[in-house]
Structure formats: C-alpha cells, structure tokens
Image 1 (cartoon, one colour):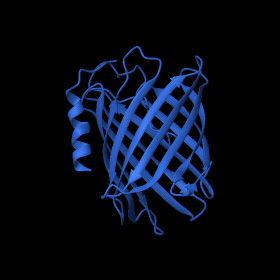
Image 2 (cartoon, rainbow, N blue to C red):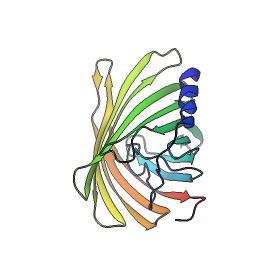
Image 3 (tube, one colour):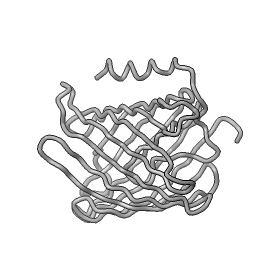
Amino acid sequence: MKKLFLCILLLSATIANAQFTETLSSDRPGQALSSNTVGKNVFQIQAGIDFSENNSEFFPNSYFRYGLSEKLELNSGIILSGNKFANEIASFSIGARYNLSDVNSKYASTLQFSHDFGATNSNSQLTYILASSLSEKLSYTVNLGINFDNNFGLNNGIYVFNLSYVINSKMGVFLEPFGNFLNNSYQFNIDSGVYYLLNNNFQIDALIGDNNGLFIGAGFTWRIPTKKI
C-alpha cells in the first residue's frame, strides 16, 4: 500500500495541463468524486452534515484538498459518528488524486487513491473517475473503485453513476445510483441533490437519498485560491 501511494505522489513530476477553472469543482453533493483536481496551490474545504434515518445518527464530515500541481492534489477526509452526537471517528482518510486527461480531450479521467485508517479496521481504495458532457447542460461522472485491506485482499468493488444537469450558471441538480459489488453481493442505492454557487469560490448544497433507509444532508464547498481569477 505504501509503495502504491508513493508511486502516485511521484506523478507530480509530470508536466501539467491547466485544471484551475473559473468556478470551483466540488465532490459535493453526492457520492461521486469529481474528475477535476483543484489546481496548483489551491486549498479547498468540502464540509457538511448527513442524517441517517436507519440509525438516527448525524454524520458531520469534512474533506480537505490541496493542489501540489495542476494535475496532482493531496486530500484528506474525516467523518464523525456516534450515539452521542459526533463522539466517534468513523473514518479518517489520506489520499491523492491525479488527472490523466489531455487538455483538449472530450473525456476527463482521473485516479484517486486513499487510505482510510478507520475506527476499527483500516483499508485502502483505488478509484478510476471518468467524466464527459452529453450536451451543453447535461453531463455524467462515473466512479469505479476497489476497496482492499492492508494485505491487498479484496473487500469489495464500488460504483457511482452521477448524472448532472446545469439549470443556470449558478445552480445545478443531479441524480446518482451508487453502491458496492463483488464478493457475491450487489448493493443498489440512490440519491439526488442540488447545489448553488454564491460566487466562484463558495457553493452550498443539499441532498436526499436511500441507503438501507432515508438519509439527508447539506453542506458547503469553499475554494481558497492563491491566484487571482
């Protein structure tokens, strides 16, 4: 696992294509990871809180992203849980995302690797991200990943298919099925949500879905660039 993570970091030596966009690109709301990296020297915070009807628990969560180059970012996330409000760490991950695409390519593709130290059992995940536009307003993002333990034993596969529609320059909606597969099991969940850009560097969002019970969530994304837009 350490060797794989090191290989991803070494990709920072590759000459980059520009990934810094006029408006921020967030993983929120929803389950799909974005195919974009944040851009060189850009710091981005993605934070929110989810509520699960299944166990009546709140899950505050935060995700931090920093661009080492235009194509490579480091990221880290934490999810809290517990019967008493957010008194336990459910997930703590450290990872890296590398953009594989050429600047003029119709398809954007990215690799994300992360290691989750977890509350009890640690695991790692490697995810391939593919995104493209179907029209001026309609686009899709696909995540396909594998989750494995410290001995590289396969735990399961992960899939997300996010279909997004841009209503106007500030607002958009999405619908996505997601779940796990492999190891003689298949899981189908679904969620939908909306985002609104208050400005190019700040976004608010909300979502609702079903994952063995109703869940809802809301949050924000704040991009802190070091370059003037």
